[in-house]
Length: 145
Image (cartoon, rainbow, N blue to C red; front, side, top):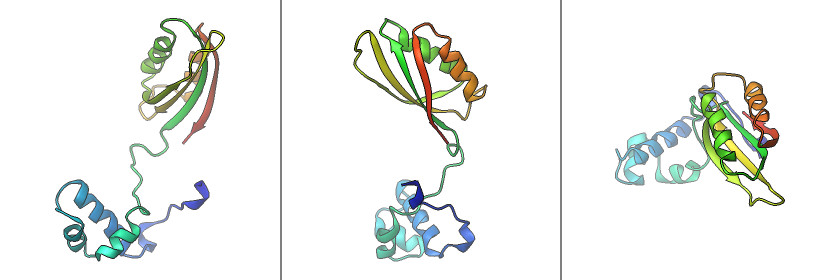
C-alpha cells in the first residue's frame, strides 16, 4: 500500500488538486453550505471535487514522522497496564490507541500506538525503560514513522 503513494512538490501538481483540498476545508470548516458552494468558492467543478476528494491530502506537520507502534507481553496482574502508561507519561509519549488481548496463561498481549512528537527521550530509551518494569515480559517496536 505504501507504494501507492507519492509525496510531490505542490508546484508540479495540476492547479485543481490544491483546490479540491481547499473545497474540502471549506466544507469541514462550515464556510460553505454544500459541495456546490465549496466547489464554486474554490474555483473547481463539482465533478472535479467528487473525482479527487478522497485522493489528495495535505500531510499534517505536527503528526508526520511522530508515530510508533509497540507490542508488549504483560503479566496478568492488577495495575500492569497502569505501570506501562506511567512510564509512557513520564517520557511525554501520548497514547493514540491501546489494544489488549484476553489474558491466557497469566499473560496478555498489548499493542499501543503512540504520538512521539513530545517525547523527552529517544524511542529506544523508552523501550529500555518499559523492559525494566517487572510485569513486562517482552517489548517490541513494531513500526515507527
